[in-house]
Amino acid sequence: MKAPLYQIDAFADRVFEGNPAAVVPLSEWPADALMQAIAAENNLAETAFFVPEGEGYRLRWFTPAVEVDLCGHATLASAHVLFSHLGYARPEICFETRSGTLIVRREGDILAMDFPAAKPKPYPAPTEIAAALGGNARVWARSTHVLAVFDSASDVAALKPDLAVLKRLMSRSDGALAASAPAHEGSGVDFVSRVFAPNLGIDEDPVTGAVHCVLVPYWARRLGKSDLVARQISARGGTLYCTSMGERVILRGRCADYMKAEISF
Image 1 (cartoon, rainbow, N blue to C red):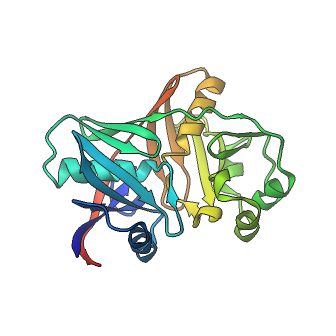
Image 2 (image 1 turned 135 degrees about the horizontal axis):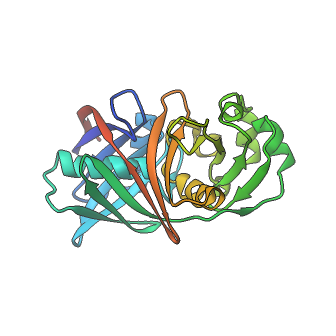
Image 3 (image 1 turned 45 degrees about the horizontal axis):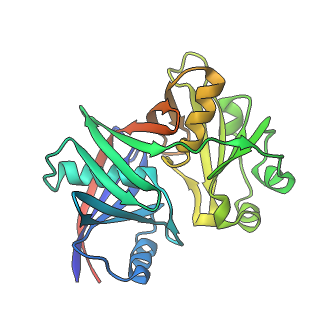
């Protein structure tokens, strides 16, 4: 069999920014083991596969090691492929996923994703995980992912976690570990983050949409505002324009095309 493969930089204004995702449009599902092998071969944070279903598409995401329940940047990249390369003409796309129905809409040159909020709850500081992360987090919380909140963006930027220890301590059900802090005053950004998930096969994720389902409700409540600009300060970096809507979160971003290829399997 052959299939097209698109490599898209999501949450990016230009190539080499944001988070790369592979997107593989399919007409029918291959075996799960084959999709996992393709994701491992791509060796990107996520590879997305979608198949037409009803009026929309069924969408699945794989890291190099495991299928995941939710992935923001690969959803954004999949919608970009449909809108920009596959002639999808409607103003919004409905994806059926493990996390329910996800809707992606065009808003000018930006794509807006409607995701479920994952409001974090206070979490006793996990001593060993905190030591492996480093720094001095003031707040710990968790829902679908673990959140460590620091005093400043500089604290987050300076982190040098022991990834091998984090991989040993955190299970797949823990999700990722997000370190976050208020952005520097005058930066035009409300909060920053870095995301580590060696337990999911990703040492540091460049830009993580799913984790912002946790971050946005937290910062909306703490800062007392519903519209937020977030910057993930990984080496590549990426910007998300976010809105907290109670039980839902809107995550907006741009995509840049890097590569179109054909894979054989």
